[in-house]
Amino acid sequence: MDSHQVITRPLHTEKSVRDMNENNTYHFEVHPDATKGQIRHAIEELFPGRTVVDVRTLWVKGKARRVRWNVGRTRKWKKAMVKLRPGDSIDIGY
Image (cartoon, rainbow, N blue to C red; front, side, top):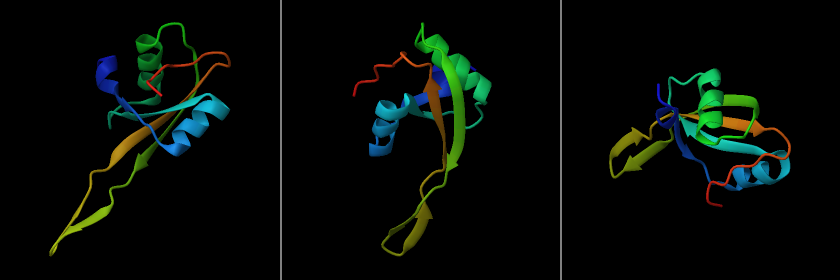
């Protein structure tokens, strides 16, 4: 799997910005089949000179949504929290 396929997009939430500033941890949406090793390799390849210390992954469950009488669910997706070596940073636009 290509590095651009592994990392889908960076996440911009209040919690992700706080983790970025306090813990040097960045949040990404990743491919559902991506492993921690693939995520580590993709980050180090897409952002040269950065060293990944830790990768944590989790599944975000889809929420129930209702449109008039129809009930459905949003999609579930995989989230990765990547901790970088102290002193390293990633400029992802915020």
